[in-house]
Length: 363
Image 1: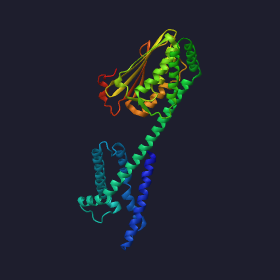
Image 2: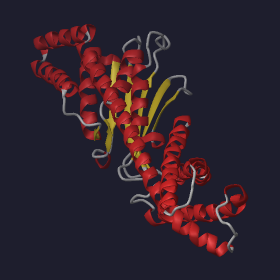
Image 3: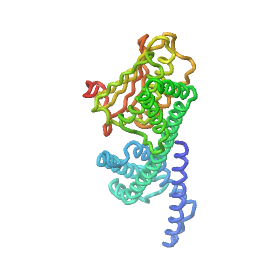
Image 4: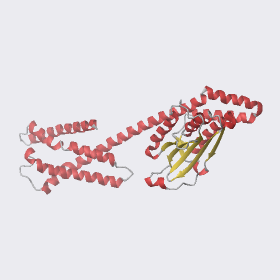
């Protein structure tokens, strides 16, 4: 903000110098002796009020930019602001006439107002237009920074997914399970190898978008769960129940995998007793809700996790949807750990009352 104030003050300083030069040239052409000192005094008196007015205009343009949304309402606000500037400059001219000698004899207020319209209408509109350009540039820069952060976040998620799949311990266990199955169930071993290949291919795809349908996200997760169910045997069971109506709703790419993997690695795989995991999805109001629940390990939670999975998903949700999405971990039940994901439905704006509506069709 300080830089903006300096830039606006510098702009009007340059404008004042240009105006002073024009005053000297015009008065000299009329045969009047008009010194630079007097010209600078007039120019300063004319341009200084525009510094706070421009700052005010910037705040208004930032809050009410003219665009496709609320076009007429925001345009009316801007025109009213320009009209306010014209009235203020007229009153300012009357109040400061003893200092700057705008008029040898003060005319009526109506005449001063007409003069202010002629002097400040186009200037005020120009200021508003220039500020729109500045605000638009700021929005573009902010959007580019968000996209850069989002790309880095998604790249990190891809690397984490590939890293998990290429983890020597995971691959050793998975391939060892394939080798054992080859002796007793070739068909199941073949399915496990296909699942491993599909996961690697999905994690390495270079053309992934920021979002993809829930069905694609669940396909990745179910491949992972199939591998872990074969590897862990009776120690793990999983249940995925999602209605077909929810399958085409877009979700952030690779957002469920880190959460499901946390449940398997940090709870089920380290428990001495059989564990379970359940995935549910439903719509409520204008959101898609996803729930990942798992049984806790009797031995207690692991202490060597770094929270990267949840943190990565939470950051991506914020970058994609802002305050319209959230991730929360519910730690109230002693035997169950639950993570819930809330994603806005496509093409919706979320009013506060939406959260109070009942559940939708897919559950």
